[in-house]
Length: 508
Image 1 (cartoon, helix red, strand yellow):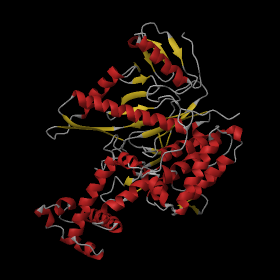
Image 2 (tube, helix red, strand yellow):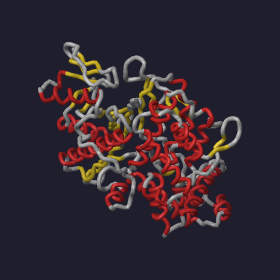
Image 3 (cartoon, rainbow, N blue to C red):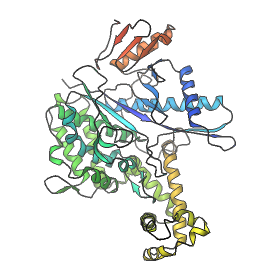
């Protein structure tokens, strides 16, 4: 009998409003309006604070940093998890529409699957994953870190290095904001592996909380991100040690090496000597999973492994089909075409590296650091200070007009990268998808249930059913919910959901 699996995704979204006079709206008021709309239009139980548990078993709340976050219900396979992520996006888009209709002064109200901000502040929006298991948390970093470092070859959101001045294309913008190998902190001093002791379940169950991933538009990429990770965790539970043979010598530099290598050919230093490419490490993990007895893996393992192998084969062959399937490959092809008639892509990348070098050198000049972008935009006082940097420019065969064009194109690309993940018809990914030029959806029969309002089976189903029932009976305001319990505030009467696989529960 195949093992049972349980997983979920928590996604942070950016929200921006523009008033009819062109002024950016106050974000806190927008979020308050968004949640006011949720409280009136969504059947829910409050979570003890300002968050809402919905009839589909999911949670909608305001997270640290004051942005909306949607946590899927507990899902049994990666396809189901992605289906509920998309349901959350549809919900947020509908709430934004309601807010705009109720506020005629708003010219535009947009919600984004954002991953990073390009103001070099280090701001990032998380897309976290949770996986149920029974292993000691301390056993997991060594087995999973090589996977997290290399899975970005298919699960990276694509974009630009958010901490550099140039338009340095990267498979994973978030990779540059993970300074540690392991860490407890999830909002600042982050690590590739997040050590968190918050099981959200009864005794014996643990939760692996993953913070190194990114919001993805491609269904294929999102299913692979979740499914491969869940299968590797199952292999560890089955007694295998898939990460032992591919331990990385320097994981933090390694993830940046992989992120900087769209061809996935660069070698990564392995402990004990030698190098392996990201594709080779992923093939090793795939082989380890397939070596497990079928009864120690979820029933969907074979289907996911076939998808995993197919994408690795495409990456190995540098298949152009990737440009219609994976987020980072779609973006890279799009952005190259975006600038090609004004500046070759290779020149864009070279000019970006030159700008970064100029910034470092100008910081050491006697006249003090030069704001190069300001100087090239027409700041006469700053422009006169650029002469010490001209030898660098000449050595690259560029002139200041080339750098001005680069800066304009860079800013266009930054905006395009933000708009790529915008929810709704104005989003660039959504436009490409509607035009039929993408091939990211998976040919799998979808369940008849509506993920926006109906929960999956298990304790999410019990929770969602009671949210619906209490709302229909007019008692919802008297009850509260969290992941492990529903309770009556006045009497303490409760529904115990500590068993993550419970299918029914009695009030006590």
